[in-house]
Image (tube, rainbow, N blue to C red):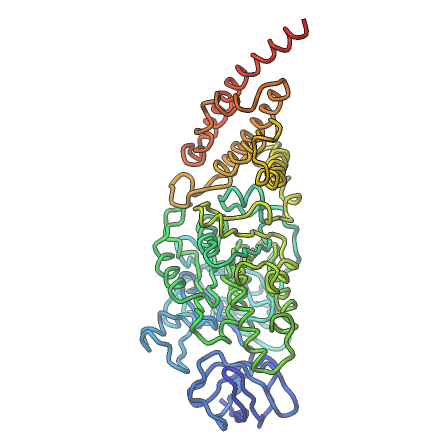
Length: 596
């Protein structure tokens, strides 16, 4: 390894080096005798500014800098699934075995096991013309994940040799390709720069919903496969709990969870719980299709900045196999704080609240890597990004939340008051929104219910109407309102209790299938319209509230009706109709008598 220069200035994780040989922008370097991992972030004359991703205590001016001749990247191949890595893809379990519970400076371990053998089913034949993105072969990585390994995107040529089926290490040559620049050997592993998006053949419209099983999300504020969402909320609002529920229940093939700057005890809970969670579809451990990236608040701040790029690069790799990936970033606020700290050490001019002026562009470059795409091999894959935001004191007007809103199409605003009232998910139905409703409505109409869009719009109208009436109710009380408005408040409370709230601990209510959601939605919309018609005939709202005995059963629908038993919801609607019809009949006769 060639010595590229010497350190002349140090400020925490940021330092400057006088170059003896040329370094390139974003080149990976190693610093000091411990060979700490770093990256070139600026060049001016013969001075290179470096960002170091490990603890720099004890480093002094004069320490050597070594250039690696390649950008900061990650290793991609079999063996990632079920792994726990830090922000620069060092396997934490392997590092713990070597250094104990504290990570020693300069300690390194390969992300992929070099000795383990994988059973490969080759997909190449000699003489075949091979292009980047095509399938090299298939490997069963876990019982839940079969890899169709993509050829590196820059490969283009004729296959001159292909290995037979067998067991291979990630570094073993399994094919040779004659390219325009000479013969190239391919193995099961490839390396990719984390800051460079992996290419695709083209982007596809987001027309398929990512089903999460959470009714308030799937119905009121849905996200599409390949979409982007922000989950803002103050401390204790339930961001981590919601993201863990989404990781467990959403219908993605692969889950990547990035703990970016979270408290150590909170991340430790995640690391303890995930290996014991079961995949609801198969009963297998969920960790068999999950990758965890743990970069806690007490780890070096620069590695926090790199962690989300590591996560999104891993997601794109599985996307290129034709898989659907959901990436949970918890939280992007801590990532932005890392940007702010590094920017301050670089003595850059601060913008709003001390954040660097390039914060919006960095957020945009991250979220734009989501999408549903046609891969280079002609398959369909997607990366869905769900980023938690932790605004101080729950203030959604702070810069990270405001700029994130510009680049995402779904906004799940968490409400601390709802969380304190044990309302889960604590998604505020007034402040939240989704920009995917129109795109995914045809999917619901084709696969679930033609009336889904109309019923959803009706429920949204009821909740918005309730929001407008709350100010009046606070001033003069509900008894002064007309009966139609009092019934709206009553049904809005039913919607909150029966539909918007779920129990993550209830075996039935933790997840709702789309047919069950549509059936519950139809029941609530229909009984509202039916009740309004009866009130219009002169019936007082009190009779509807007091004489209908089935309202408690409506409130318990989520936990009492199994996902497969939507006929029970239809039967309950008929019973409600019968009780409402009995009240309506009294006023039909009264109106007829008055007319005579």
